[in-house]
Length: 220
Image 1: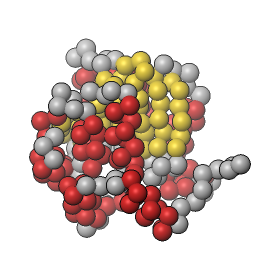
Image 2: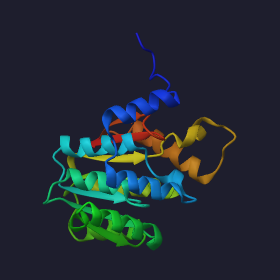
Image 3: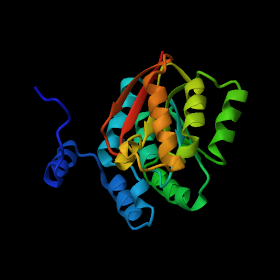
């Protein structure tokens, strides 16, 4: 019996990615361009993008919120899974990063499905709630500034419908969550949210060792 998830050597990881064909030409070009950037480590892994797209299809998602866009890899993966009637509200504050995202959204012909909001995500999320859109979204993905993870989680949980998903990225934070010497605000915020989600009676939750750790919370 396997007690825990097996470790992945570089060769085994390459096998996983190659076998599942995680990237097509557009996604591969986006990944290559992003890899030249100083902040390239912020991009999700290809198998995570594929997993998120599959989850969107499994729940029949049509309306999605993304908190933290970077260069648009995750939003591109998910937008493709939403169908022509899909709508993805993408929240970010960086015009340079999202300019790259826009180019690839257009190349993939999903730009009409994506509503980019260049503003603090808290403002956008609270604006959606004030506009009467609570419980109207099928899925949310949080991958932004860690110190605000709790408020993003609370607002997204309010915005998704019962049975909808809230996904939270970087919940293992490179292993820092178990490093007692790491007292940084970012690490503390992730630890606190992990504990909160694990005992939150409003959701069914699973923490998966995908990428840098991905938590899935299904709203009850």
